[in-house]
Image (cartoon, rainbow, N blue to C red; front, side):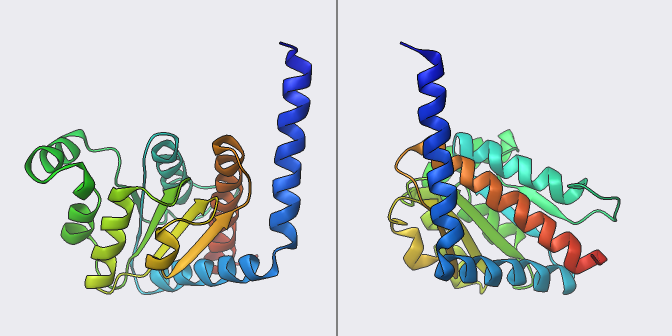
Length: 194
């Protein structure tokens, strides 16, 4: 095991995936539409609800914090909530309805048509994200997913599916963070001026 070679390999994979995304005009346009969905939500007095599993749950919390606190500039707070943090809600829904519904049930109880849902799933196959997207459709909540690989089933369910290139979970998750930070930066600029 050579740590330097591992690092070089991972940096090269990360750079390659980022360059691939940079050149994917269709994906860039999808991202632009996703940004506008969030901006429209905020202009209507809505909020963003964010969900994911494992590392993507941490990313959901990270992004919610960026919206509520700030990314890089002083501004008013923007309402955002990670659906991954309330242990009583998560365990009650998991116990009473099953883990597949932990996010869908929260969307049903919290979200309105002026809000937006963002699901984060590296595989694009997470059952609880799929159920949340079904719930979004049933109550007309706009939906976005950050996913990876071929987009999985979520790409067919979400209004805006941003597929991060890359073959490894770690590379896809790195791109999800770039997408999340850029989403927040764009929303800040749209809501509070350049």
